[in-house]
Amino acid sequence: MLNIPAFLKSSPLWLNLKDKLAGEVTPSAIALCLSGSLHSALLLEISKIMLCLNKDGCGRCLSCMAWSEGSHPDLIVSSEQGPPSVDQCREMIDELHLKAVVSSGRIGVVPCADKLNINSANSLLKITEEPPAGCRLIFLMEENRLIPTLRSRIWTIVFPEEDTFPPLSPPSGKAQWMGWLERISSFDREQLILELQGFIGFLVQKKLYLKASNLSQLIFLAGQTNLSVSMMGDMVFLLIEEEYPFESVFDRIW
Ligand SMILES: [Zn+2]
Image 1 (cartoon, rainbow, N blue to C red):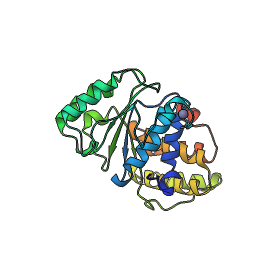
Image 2: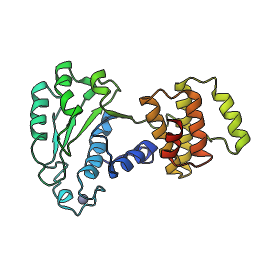
Image 3: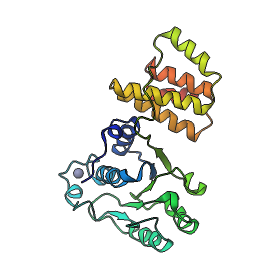
Image 4: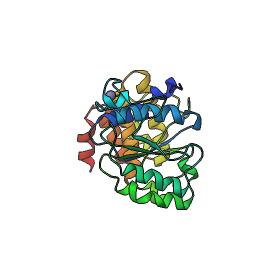
Protein backbone atom coordinates (compact mmCIF):
# COMPACT_ATOMS: atom_id res chain seq x y z
CA MET A 1 0.00 0.00 0.00
CA LEU A 2 1.31 3.42 -0.92
CA ASN A 3 1.82 5.95 1.80
CA ILE A 4 1.70 9.70 1.69
CA PRO A 5 5.26 11.00 2.01
CA ALA A 6 6.19 12.81 5.20
CA PHE A 7 6.71 16.19 3.54
CA LEU A 8 3.12 16.10 2.35
CA LYS A 9 1.73 14.89 5.66
CA SER A 10 3.40 17.77 7.47
CA SER A 11 2.35 20.31 4.86
CA PRO A 12 -0.14 22.85 6.20
CA LEU A 13 -2.31 22.26 3.16
CA TRP A 14 -2.76 18.64 4.13
CA LEU A 15 -3.37 19.49 7.77
CA ASN A 16 -5.87 22.14 6.81
CA LEU A 17 -7.61 19.76 4.46
CA LYS A 18 -7.82 17.04 7.12
CA ASP A 19 -9.29 19.62 9.44
CA LYS A 20 -11.89 20.58 6.86
CA LEU A 21 -12.78 16.95 6.11
CA ALA A 22 -13.45 16.36 9.79
CA GLY A 23 -15.58 19.50 10.09
CA GLU A 24 -19.19 20.05 9.25
CA VAL A 25 -18.71 22.24 6.23
CA THR A 26 -16.70 20.24 3.75
CA PRO A 27 -16.66 21.70 0.28
CA SER A 28 -18.71 19.35 -1.87
CA ALA A 29 -16.14 19.35 -4.67
CA ILE A 30 -12.40 19.49 -4.19
CA ALA A 31 -9.60 19.26 -6.71
CA LEU A 32 -6.21 18.03 -5.58
CA CYS A 33 -3.26 19.04 -7.68
CA LEU A 34 -0.04 17.13 -7.11
CA SER A 35 2.38 14.68 -8.67
CA GLY A 36 0.52 11.75 -10.26
CA SER A 37 2.56 9.19 -8.35
CA LEU A 38 0.86 10.37 -5.15
CA HIS A 39 -2.73 10.38 -6.39
CA SER A 40 -3.78 6.91 -5.23
CA ALA A 41 -2.20 7.30 -1.81
CA LEU A 42 -3.78 10.69 -1.21
CA LEU A 43 -7.17 9.61 -2.54
CA LEU A 44 -7.18 6.60 -0.26
CA GLU A 45 -6.22 8.62 2.78
CA ILE A 46 -8.81 11.32 2.13
CA SER A 47 -11.69 9.07 1.22
CA LYS A 48 -11.07 6.95 4.33
CA ILE A 49 -11.71 10.07 6.39
CA MET A 50 -14.61 11.33 4.28
CA LEU A 51 -16.47 8.03 4.21
CA CYS A 52 -15.91 7.19 7.88
CA LEU A 53 -19.07 7.55 9.95
CA ASN A 54 -16.95 9.19 12.64
CA LYS A 55 -15.19 11.45 10.11
CA ASP A 56 -11.72 10.39 11.19
CA GLY A 57 -11.01 7.08 9.47
CA CYS A 58 -11.60 5.30 12.80
CA GLY A 59 -11.16 1.83 11.32
CA ARG A 60 -14.02 0.50 13.47
CA CYS A 61 -17.28 1.87 12.04
CA LEU A 62 -19.39 0.04 9.44
CA SER A 63 -18.06 2.21 6.66
CA CYS A 64 -14.41 1.78 7.63
CA MET A 65 -14.93 -1.99 7.81
CA ALA A 66 -16.27 -1.97 4.26
CA TRP A 67 -12.88 -1.18 2.74
CA SER A 68 -11.36 -3.99 0.78
CA GLU A 69 -7.99 -3.61 -0.91
CA GLY A 70 -8.40 0.08 -1.61
CA SER A 71 -11.98 -0.11 -2.82
CA HIS A 72 -15.20 0.80 -1.04
CA PRO A 73 -18.85 0.44 -2.06
CA ASP A 74 -19.41 4.19 -1.72
CA LEU A 75 -16.26 5.27 -3.52
CA ILE A 76 -17.10 5.58 -7.21
CA VAL A 77 -14.02 6.03 -9.38
CA SER A 78 -15.07 7.09 -12.87
CA SER A 79 -12.09 5.70 -14.74
CA GLU A 80 -9.40 3.16 -13.96
CA GLN A 81 -6.94 4.68 -16.37
CA GLY A 82 -6.71 8.14 -17.89
CA PRO A 83 -9.43 10.78 -17.85
CA PRO A 84 -13.03 9.49 -17.88
CA SER A 85 -15.00 9.57 -21.14
CA VAL A 86 -18.46 11.16 -21.23
CA ASP A 87 -20.01 7.71 -20.81
CA GLN A 88 -17.84 6.97 -17.81
CA CYS A 89 -18.78 10.33 -16.30
CA ARG A 90 -22.48 9.56 -16.79
CA GLU A 91 -22.11 6.12 -15.23
CA MET A 92 -20.46 7.68 -12.22
CA ILE A 93 -23.19 10.33 -11.96
CA ASP A 94 -25.88 7.62 -12.03
CA GLU A 95 -24.10 5.74 -9.26
CA LEU A 96 -23.77 8.89 -7.21
CA HIS A 97 -27.53 9.34 -7.27
CA LEU A 98 -28.03 5.95 -5.62
CA LYS A 99 -28.27 5.73 -1.88
CA ALA A 100 -24.97 5.21 -0.10
CA VAL A 101 -24.37 1.59 0.93
CA VAL A 102 -22.67 2.02 4.29
CA SER A 103 -21.50 5.61 4.50
CA SER A 104 -23.49 8.81 4.95
CA GLY A 105 -22.84 9.79 1.34
CA ARG A 106 -20.98 8.66 -1.76
CA ILE A 107 -17.80 10.02 -3.27
CA GLY A 108 -17.23 10.36 -6.99
CA VAL A 109 -13.64 10.48 -8.24
CA VAL A 110 -12.46 12.06 -11.46
CA PRO A 111 -8.86 11.02 -12.19
CA CYS A 112 -6.68 13.03 -14.63
CA ALA A 113 -9.13 15.93 -14.35
CA ASP A 114 -6.57 18.24 -15.99
CA LYS A 115 -6.86 16.12 -19.14
CA LEU A 116 -10.67 15.94 -19.31
CA ASN A 117 -12.08 16.65 -22.74
CA ILE A 118 -14.65 19.40 -22.96
CA ASN A 119 -17.64 17.04 -23.29
CA SER A 120 -16.67 15.03 -20.23
CA ALA A 121 -16.07 18.22 -18.29
CA ASN A 122 -19.45 19.63 -19.33
CA SER A 123 -21.21 16.44 -18.30
CA LEU A 124 -19.88 17.02 -14.77
CA LEU A 125 -21.06 20.62 -14.39
CA LYS A 126 -24.48 19.90 -12.98
CA ILE A 127 -23.44 17.34 -10.38
CA THR A 128 -20.57 19.57 -9.32
CA GLU A 129 -22.94 22.47 -8.89
CA GLU A 130 -25.74 20.54 -7.18
CA PRO A 131 -24.52 17.19 -5.87
CA PRO A 132 -27.11 14.78 -4.41
CA ALA A 133 -27.35 14.99 -0.61
CA GLY A 134 -24.17 13.82 1.10
CA CYS A 135 -22.37 13.28 -2.20
CA ARG A 136 -18.92 14.72 -2.76
CA LEU A 137 -16.56 14.88 -5.69
CA ILE A 138 -12.80 14.60 -5.80
CA PHE A 139 -10.88 15.72 -8.88
CA LEU A 140 -7.27 14.58 -9.20
CA MET A 141 -4.82 16.39 -11.42
CA GLU A 142 -1.13 16.90 -12.03
CA GLU A 143 -1.44 20.39 -13.43
CA ASN A 144 -3.79 23.05 -12.18
CA ARG A 145 -5.73 23.13 -15.43
CA LEU A 146 -9.45 22.52 -15.06
CA ILE A 147 -11.79 24.09 -17.57
CA PRO A 148 -12.88 27.44 -16.09
CA THR A 149 -16.59 26.59 -15.70
CA LEU A 150 -15.66 23.61 -13.54
CA ARG A 151 -12.88 25.43 -11.72
CA SER A 152 -15.22 28.08 -10.38
CA ARG A 153 -17.28 25.41 -8.63
CA ILE A 154 -14.43 23.51 -7.04
CA TRP A 155 -12.10 24.10 -4.13
CA THR A 156 -8.67 23.52 -5.67
CA ILE A 157 -5.72 22.62 -3.49
CA VAL A 158 -2.30 22.74 -5.11
CA PHE A 159 0.23 20.78 -3.09
CA PRO A 160 3.79 22.05 -3.25
CA GLU A 161 6.55 19.83 -4.55
CA GLU A 162 9.01 18.77 -1.91
CA ASP A 163 11.38 21.57 -0.90
CA THR A 164 9.72 24.13 -3.14
CA PHE A 165 9.36 26.62 -0.36
CA PRO A 166 12.35 27.09 1.92
CA PRO A 167 11.18 27.96 5.43
CA LEU A 168 11.22 31.66 6.17
CA SER A 169 10.96 33.08 9.65
CA PRO A 170 8.07 35.57 10.04
CA PRO A 171 8.81 38.93 11.70
CA SER A 172 8.58 39.08 15.46
CA GLY A 173 7.47 42.07 17.54
CA LYS A 174 5.63 45.21 16.42
CA ALA A 175 8.67 47.00 14.97
CA GLN A 176 9.66 44.10 12.73
CA TRP A 177 6.08 43.64 11.59
CA MET A 178 5.76 47.32 10.70
CA GLY A 179 8.95 47.01 8.65
CA TRP A 180 7.58 43.91 6.95
CA LEU A 181 4.25 45.55 6.11
CA GLU A 182 6.19 48.46 4.64
CA ARG A 183 8.37 46.10 2.58
CA ILE A 184 5.50 44.05 1.16
CA SER A 185 3.57 47.16 0.13
CA SER A 186 5.54 47.05 -3.13
CA PHE A 187 4.87 43.30 -3.63
CA ASP A 188 2.36 41.90 -6.02
CA ARG A 189 0.07 39.17 -4.81
CA GLU A 190 2.21 36.30 -6.18
CA GLN A 191 5.30 37.59 -4.40
CA LEU A 192 3.38 37.89 -1.16
CA ILE A 193 2.01 34.35 -1.49
CA LEU A 194 5.53 33.00 -2.05
CA GLU A 195 6.66 34.76 1.10
CA LEU A 196 3.68 33.33 3.02
CA GLN A 197 4.50 29.81 1.76
CA GLY A 198 7.93 30.32 3.35
CA PHE A 199 6.30 31.38 6.64
CA ILE A 200 4.10 28.30 6.48
CA GLY A 201 7.17 26.09 6.08
CA PHE A 202 8.74 27.75 9.11
CA LEU A 203 5.59 27.45 11.24
CA VAL A 204 5.25 23.76 10.40
CA GLN A 205 8.87 23.17 11.40
CA LYS A 206 8.07 24.83 14.73
CA LYS A 207 4.94 22.66 14.99
CA LEU A 208 2.72 25.76 15.00
CA TYR A 209 0.16 23.95 12.88
CA LEU A 210 -2.81 26.18 13.65
CA LYS A 211 -0.99 29.30 12.50
CA ALA A 212 0.30 27.47 9.44
CA SER A 213 -3.17 26.26 8.62
CA ASN A 214 -4.60 29.77 9.09
CA LEU A 215 -2.08 31.14 6.62
CA SER A 216 -2.85 28.49 4.04
CA GLN A 217 -6.54 29.24 4.47
CA LEU A 218 -5.77 32.91 3.89
CA ILE A 219 -3.95 32.04 0.67
CA PHE A 220 -6.96 29.99 -0.41
CA LEU A 221 -9.37 32.84 0.32
CA ALA A 222 -7.11 35.34 -1.42
CA GLY A 223 -7.48 33.24 -4.54
CA GLN A 224 -11.26 33.34 -4.21
CA THR A 225 -11.62 37.03 -3.48
CA ASN A 226 -10.03 40.33 -4.39
CA LEU A 227 -8.08 40.83 -1.21
CA SER A 228 -5.39 43.43 -1.83
CA VAL A 229 -1.77 42.85 -0.84
CA SER A 230 -2.05 45.36 2.00
CA MET A 231 -5.23 43.74 3.34
CA MET A 232 -3.55 40.34 3.21
CA GLY A 233 -0.52 41.78 4.99
CA ASP A 234 -2.69 43.15 7.80
CA MET A 235 -4.42 39.79 8.15
CA VAL A 236 -1.11 37.95 8.32
CA PHE A 237 -0.04 40.28 11.12
CA LEU A 238 -3.27 39.68 13.06
CA LEU A 239 -3.08 35.91 12.60
CA ILE A 240 0.59 35.39 13.35
CA GLU A 241 1.62 38.14 15.74
CA GLU A 242 -1.64 38.98 17.46
CA GLU A 243 -2.96 35.41 17.28
CA TYR A 244 -6.49 36.42 16.39
CA PRO A 245 -8.78 33.51 15.46
CA PHE A 246 -9.15 33.17 11.70
CA GLU A 247 -12.89 33.84 11.67
CA SER A 248 -12.62 37.12 13.52
CA VAL A 249 -9.77 38.30 11.26
CA PHE A 250 -11.76 37.53 8.17
CA ASP A 251 -14.89 39.18 9.57
CA ARG A 252 -12.99 42.39 10.32
CA ILE A 253 -11.79 42.78 6.77
CA TRP A 254 -14.93 41.58 5.06
ZN1 LIG B 1 -14.82 4.85 10.66
